[in-house]
Image 1 (tube, rainbow, N blue to C red):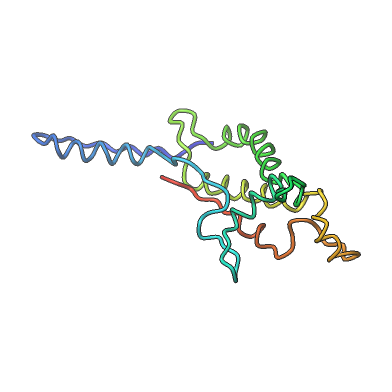
Image 2: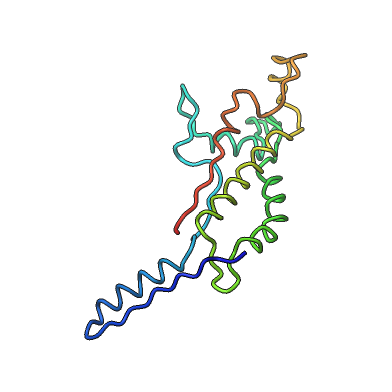
Length: 165
């Protein structure tokens, strides 16, 4: 993939401060994206009680126990599963989009990667197979309902942000 070449040059005489400003502009232009953040952010909350979706995600990811130490909610490792899938495919995807000379990831390419990562987490939620908790099983007997898909809030709240660029 070839990036269009943009070259910024300037001749400055007698102005170290002006040169420093132009140097910062050039560095910022060539910097690209700092990082991609994916997960459940502070603004994702369940309606009604305002419970953070991240809190619910952690409980499902690792499961929970009652005060006696008995399993109350089975672990449903959708985040670990998606992390594994992403880590296997990410190097190849990065090789296709990162400019090998500058090692810069453009904002557009980073947004595409962020969308892909978000969809991997959502697919992992869709594929999760551990059974629902006992109380949930009794409530849904014969409904064909799948774990982690009560309201869809957990799935729809997966977000991705491109930082920098």
